[in-house]
Image 1 (spheres, rainbow, N blue to C red):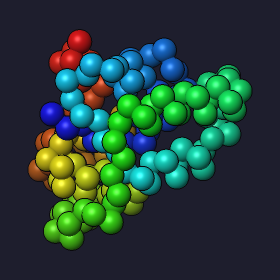
Image 2 (cartoon, rainbow, N blue to C red):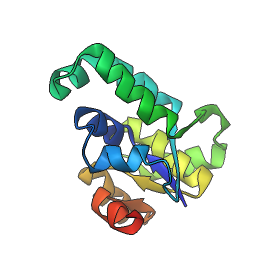
Image 3 (tube, rainbow, N blue to C red):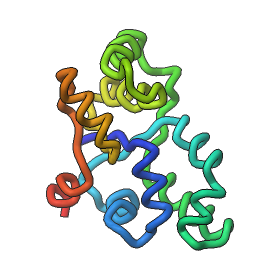
Image 4 (cartoon, one colour):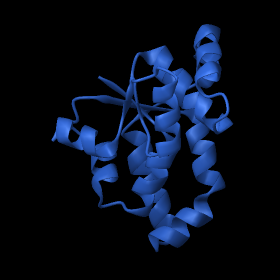
Length: 144
């Protein structure tokens, strides 16, 4: 199984590094491949000060946690996603946060399931007929 990790999952895992999200992201024997977009790294560095603030950790500690999370998954270069997948992802994410298109396109490209905590996105994608979505509780129960 391939799990496409939305940046909001990574952000939340960094804020609560001992929680379920972090456990799933960093578990060394997880029977699923975790992937995300290069764009996720940009977003995480852009919001580094928020992560430091909410995690109540130092910048160095957050960087260490970020290293653990990022080395436990594969990052996918969005320029390698096929045009047809971008077009379908655009159709699926119309009228929703435009940054979500990357993760939907990656799920289409890899045949993976999208792991996101964005309830608005989940509801919208399901209305559009995209059902390859998983939430944290479902994933945790399935894997542990």
